[in-house]
Length: 217
Image 1 (cartoon, rainbow, N blue to C red):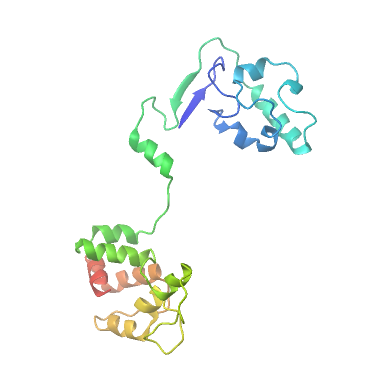
Image 2: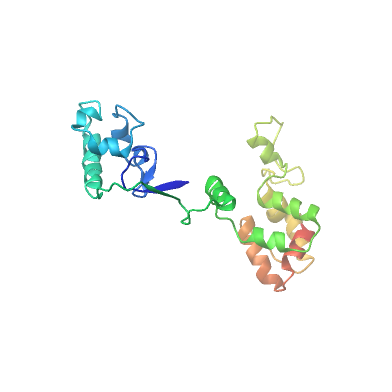
């Protein structure tokens, strides 16, 4: 979570720290595999004479290409006697627990339906149920099959079509499910869950569309 603006290079680890916007053991993995000492400072790497003091020779052709690229990077550094300047990767030199949390947990793109869900006025138990539904976490036979639970069969017990009991089948594709949706004037097809949600939103055309969908489910 920290990066260094190189000055004298004394406090910066050559391979492990983030400098010039990259961690060099990740940027040059083949070259790193030949390194004699993986814990050297950048200053030491700049002052050492001869590649044989940094790497086990001979090196592979790919490592040689990476060494050439690394040498070009090092040639762009300006010599300075000032101490290195450290900061966090999010810019300001102050620690932020929220920004550190986002960095450690990463970022995942989710469908807007989850925002619709949590903004609805339904009871929490209904919201949690629908959240499990959207994440395909309700205990259908298909889910038990994925968890290696041995059953006599995994077909939907209510259908004569010999179709696996999936959530999309039970709540959307099954004839009885489609009849249930039609009782409130909605038409569902054979689409996936999120496409069906978008279609139902358009068909309902009211601000509280998600409440209706959740309660109906």
